[in-house]
Image 1 (tube, rainbow, N blue to C red):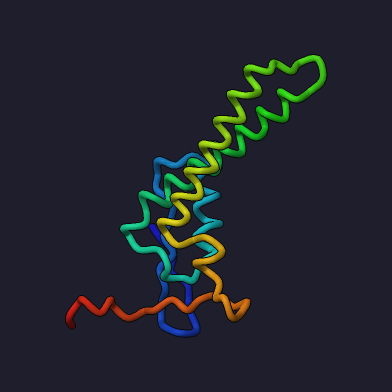
Image 2: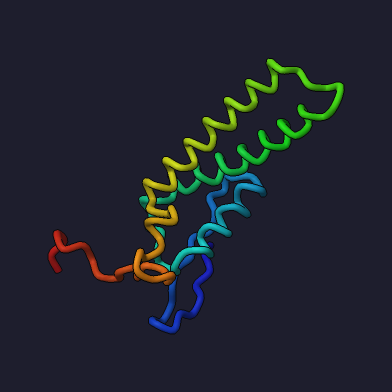
Length: 130
């Protein structure tokens, strides 16, 4: 069950818990990403992409560790090294795509005229009538 935290701007704010199908490292990544954004930033529609972002981020770290091990003296297999670098590039590309789709990149989060975070609107979109 998700925990609610008191917010100075309102009574309670929902921060989503990680899905149960994420492993421990992925769930930790989920919590860190959710905590790095304003409390109500992620909606239910974001959850599948956020879960995939966490998976790809953890996998990219694992590939990075394999690349470091591959670089050790007397163990360098150039074919394996190139395959790992290609995998790392694909993971990085997918991470960037997912981050852009959820507006989590630096350009989307920070205002150009100020180092402050962009305000997140709590109003419904204009095309939804009340």
